[in-house]
Image: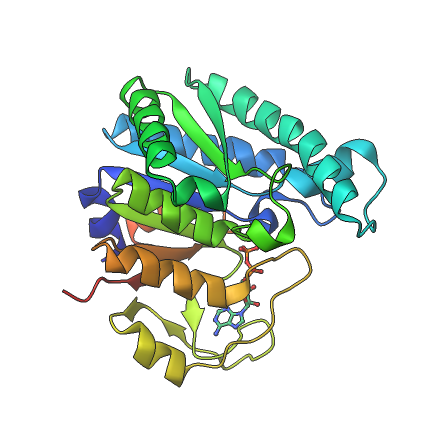
Length: 264
Ligand code: ADP
């Protein structure tokens, strides 16, 4: 099912979480990025268009500077993101150049999604980049986003992007295979739910546990992201980005994931 869904989707938004992107010590996992770029290049070779939403600016900032890890003041967090965003893009740029793809950086905030002029501009830029074979990489613009006006997590940013671009499919990569009836990190007997057709019913049935250290949104924001894109008629896949060559495996049908189907 997952395989058919990916095969039948032309415009795909892929979100990479900090957990997926980083090593245990918080540095950028370059092996992952190499393998990921290879898989994205493969998707593009299949005639698909890909937009990436990537977290990881702050952890890259910490890894680059080697300090400020525990600073909680807003302006230090923002400074770390500003430093780390450059590192992050540099890492993406290098791996995609091996496949002759250029990347482009788009930094967005919540306000950008509620102003019709900005929406139009973002949409035009996205369409132009993608039509020209460039891979847009989107992240929240942390410099201008204080807590109160933040989107706050990239699951939501990815869903908003997916709707704005009229994507055919949103794929969220996390460090679990999909949605479970309870937190798989703490409950050994948790069962994977492979298909969701009714989010309200799902939320009543499952236990939503805590997220881990690097995670921001937790599973709740992933469910809400699914609701947002499903409302636009777009399906969403939640899959395990920590598994080696996960996109290839999903295409071969050798790994499981959760599909959230729009209910129409
Ligand atoms: P990411 O950083 O990849 O966006 P998060 O760490 O924010 O991901 O959220 C994913 C985490 O949510 C999983 O690692 C898991 O421990 C936790 N979780 C809690 N409840 C559930 C559940 N019912 N099903 C799946 N994961 C769950």
